[in-house]
Image (cartoon, rainbow, N blue to C red; front, side, top):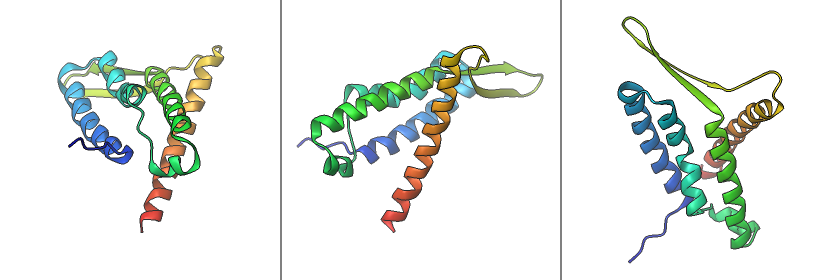
Length: 135
């Protein structure tokens, strides 16, 4: 019997795995490329296997839902690689900082920065609405 993967189950498992891999990378490996791959992993998974919430299927057909999720996955991958993570060592501590790559003269990078802020706000609003509906 094959168990169907749900969107929220995938998102929860991805969060836990990302947290663990991110901590391993932050304390042991300290690779910026690996950090970007870890952040882009959700987009890569959703691009290959588009899983969408049930309420999205109530609004659109299954084909439109898959296309929508794949578009969001591509945007997530682009935003994950638009960030730059710097790992550098001080005398006794390791400092970890993530910044969005910005150049004042490059409108593409500014668009990525604005897009990432909008995406973060949308995710927070979505989580708040989802939590309120579950109560």
